[in-house]
Every structure is written in structure tokens, then in C-alpha cells.
Image (cartoon, rainbow, N blue to C red; front, side, top):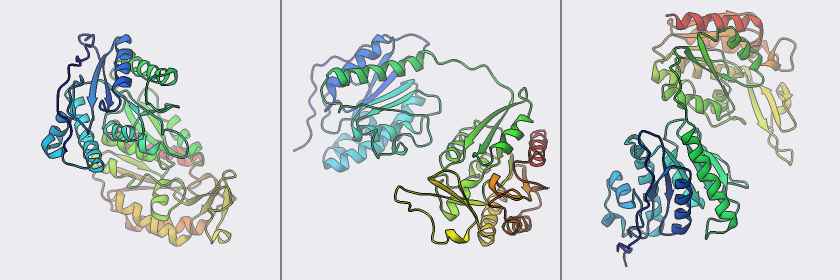
Length: 427
């Protein structure tokens, strides 16, 4: 028996439309299961002076419950009719609606149908809403409230590389009570506050620089950036821990930067050899796609890191053969072998050789991280030279190579990187 398709007499919510203001706050909800709670959210959105825009992802019925954007319109954007959707079983209908929503929400935003978006519900609603919010531009207010945003579940499924805020609802969003009302009220007021307080940023004509760093390269990176005049450069750093590099790549694709100062390539090591800071594969490729100039230093490319769990496990079997230093009780840094350095040199050279924009590679000869400096616990000139000699042989002639005596954090490397960046931005 098919899902119900009758229309009821519920009135559509009436928002207080404010001309020429960004005040349209979308609420993604399944009105066939969360009607009362969603109506309460709409009332709070109106009290904040915003206009609620309901996006109904119901999969059980087409009953008109007052949504400005209903499931039939979502499916239409996806290229599917309700008649095609209706016979699907529960699992398939949910998955299909999720894919349709992911495609439709960015289109609705581009059409100006809403200015910010929230989702309040359980795990399924949150998962569907998160997938739809992730493609939205950086800075668009987005909040997900879910009863599953806690415990051993990671934020990756909700946040990805975007600026999505996540709120734990404490209680399940099922019926209205003091707990659920409080959470709904807070989320609605937070999102509406973001909308009402957004500022139109004044045009900034400075060169926008994206840089990567870890604690073990921070002295070198920060010293380099301090040598770039603030009146000429706006500087943004990303923590290259498996998330930061991925976020930087996404913002490069979004056109946020003019030049890249990639001084910490540790995520490439983790991509190729494994380790703790995985999650940012295909580094450097956004700048290549966007034809953006790069100054590159192989910061922390010379080390692996391993997470030690509560049982003391996590270190590789050959740990006794490697040069090591403990970052803390849970993280162990280890020097790569010369043969691993050669492998990484091939990967880095292949990526840099694809760039059509200017690239300068800075090569310090006394280690690519703090612990690998001369006299340090991970100092290994054999591994460092294996990398340097290999990559210099592989790079195309258009890539400028600057050899520096010292460690990545030394003044010599800072000055070389700053000079290279000033030169590359004046081309």
C-alpha cells in the first residue's frame, strides 16, 4: 500500500519578510515524524525576526504540512517523481531522499531561497542534513542539532571540511518538554543571531596567503609570515593534522587565496606511508587545479607519527630501529627511512610537476621538523639527502629550487621562504 498523498488544512507558516535583509532561515525536518517540534522551531525563528523556510524531507507522505519546500520539489531537482519514489522500501526511500536533498539544497541556496540553515532531530535527520549543508559556502550559518552528536561518534560525519556547528540535544527530539524546548530555542536564536550580525566585509586588496603548520614547524612558518608586511598580505594558517590541510584545499578550490605557502607536508607522508594525521589526501592538488603560485617546503615530510592507545598499542614493529621522540604520552614521532624519503620525493615531484603556475621549492639541509635539526633526536642527514637528491633530479626545470643551510625552523629558511613568496607574488 502506497504512502498517503492527501492534503490537510494546516496553514503554511507566515514569516515576517524583511526586504533586502538576509533573514531567511531554513529548517530541514521530516514533518511526517517531527511536526510539533518543527513548528515550535518556526515560532522561535519568527520571534527572532527571521523568516522560517521549511524544507520537508518526509518519506512517508505528501501531505501538505506547510513547508515552503516539500519532498516532491526536492525529488524533482534530483530528477525523480513522487510516483517513482513512492514504491521504494524504507531503507531505499531514506537513502534516495538523502541524495536528492544533497543535490537540491545548494541549488536552493543559489536561488536565494534561504540565507542560513538548521537541522534539529535524530541521527538520520542529522546525517541527511549534514550531507546537504557541506557543499554550502564557507560563512553561511549552518547548525545541526542531534541526539547522536556525542559519545564515540566523531564529528567528521557532520562537519567534514566545512564550518558546520554541531549541538548535542541531550534528550531525543521526540515530543516537546523543557529539555527539547531549550535546545530548539538555543539553536534557533544562535542561527538567527548569526544571520542578523553578519557583516559586509570591506574589500581587501591584500594578497591572501594560505599557510600550513604543525607545532614542530610553527617557528619556521610563523617567522616566515612575520616577514611578510601586514599591509600587503593577509595570512591564514591551517593545522596540517589530517583536517587542516583538507580544509585549506577546499578553500583554495573556493577561490579564497592568491598564493600558497605550504611549509608543512606531513599529511602527504600520512597519505603514502600511514600514520596518525591521515585524512587529507591529494594535498597540493587544489592549487594545481586553480593555477595558484606556491612556495613549498617539505615540513614534517620527514617523520611518521603514531597514536598510542590506552593499552600501549599502536607503535609499529620496527619502532626500535627508528629514531623517535615522544610528542606527548599518546603521540610518537619517528624519522622516516632513506627509502621512504625517496618514495615521498617521487610523490611530491609528480604533483609539483603538474603545476602550470610558478612554484618555488625550499630545501633546508638539516631536517624538515624541529626534532630533525642538527643534534636533535631525529637528525638523520642520510634520509634528508636521499629526499633532496631524488627530488632535485625529478623536478621539471620550470620549478625553482632554493637550497638552504639549516633546519626548517632556522632564520635562513624563514628568510628564504619569505623572499620566495614576495618574488612569486610580484610575477
